Image (tube, rainbow, N blue to C red):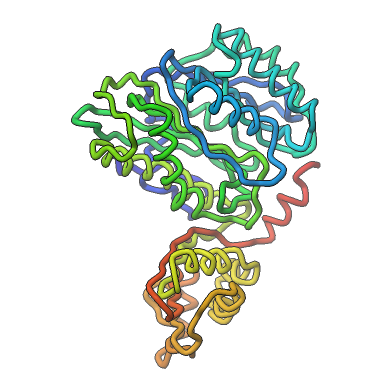
Length: 421
């Protein structure tokens, strides 16, 4: 598996070393990509992606749990359920979410799938859809219909870099990851791209992720593996605590690697594949946080000593999403009192007299009070680093959770205050 560094993003926030540089992602046999401009943005930029898959490709997906949802999410869920996971294409647009748009939005989704299906000569219900952008605006399907012939003509196997850029909204860098592994001694590759910068929180986020492998795997096995892998990857990152109506993560298998049939996710021959899949998803998820809107700090938060893993996750999320904690981090202030506040308001069991807090290797609090050797100067020096670790033991059990977040800066307010203007 590759340990090369990815394309740099924001100054001071290195991209996860699990990802290789986007230009070096190469190809996934059975996948072709093309990008173009439908015109959903005022300025000239690509905003449309088409991915085409060879016959025999299977797919699985996990989607937002947002109560409102969106037309493209509805379409994908119905398509995957009705056709046994067979997939031949994906159309993704940036600039319009096509969410909260009622029957007109559903019709626009249908027209988009039908246009791609007709141009490629494949069934419309084997065309997956994804959209990102402003909520409450009906997608202008005519723009995509007009652009589709050029997209089909431009399909190529090596278009991953352009694809990652075309789906960006407020992202500041394109996000991608690839690993190589084996299934029963047959080499296979897994590559993925993602977008997301704000409105990022567990149970999927304003993120789109498209991951493809040349492995031969049935849709049911893909679904089982993806459902597990997202829990401590995409569902373990948070930028601002908000979830979107459009979150989509698709796992697509073309079958071109030629590995022996593996029918169930529990098959021991998939052990290495599961590890590799998690590496790709974790790299993409961490890149979302590193590119958090206005972020200057990448923060790993670990909770131990909780009553259960579920309890630890709730405490961890409360800490990661606390505006007071996040602004203290932005100000490079080791204000452990704000951590205590967040731990206590998670409404989970904690032992006040046994709480311990560390910033990296530095002990800030122990046994429910400030550490005897607390060193403010050392703490302040540590907080200036672009990557931080915060560890909190709540003293009641063996539950544990890890999440990744970022700081909350004035730039976040500026980005979201100007989002539609």
